[in-house]
Length: 188
Image (cartoon, rainbow, N blue to C red; front, side, top):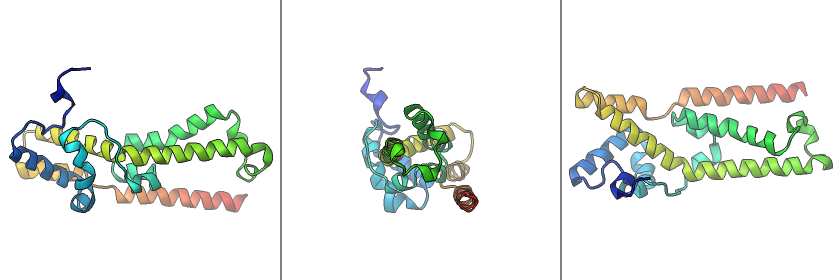
């Protein structure tokens, strides 16, 4: 770990105010229409110091892991989708053999409590780290796009394409899960 304080700061720290404004404009392009109404305030703690500070994101907390997919953070979607199942299998061996209608039986009460606690923990973690992870993704994308030999307008278009949201994929996957859940309930 470096003792240099500048190594822990955001990309625009110790820069003239014009550079700071330009970075915020690029963040706005990356984030999309919700920049002014939501994310400018959520990213404020990171603009002076990019180190982790827990901030709250209700959408990520309530819709985890799908908020990460919606925001094109595919790695984090996979982590928040699959990690809880892996941890649950480790904490409660044999949980995969318990059928959903058997979860309410007294002998499965501990498994149900662990499942509920794990899900609550995942949603709290998602709500607490989502803004920081999105900020880190945006600042990395801005740095990478700025390294490309292209006109300013083209770089803004690239930032807009790389950032933003993925409505189609997210809603399509949610719809698929709903259909599969309904089919599973109908078959049970």
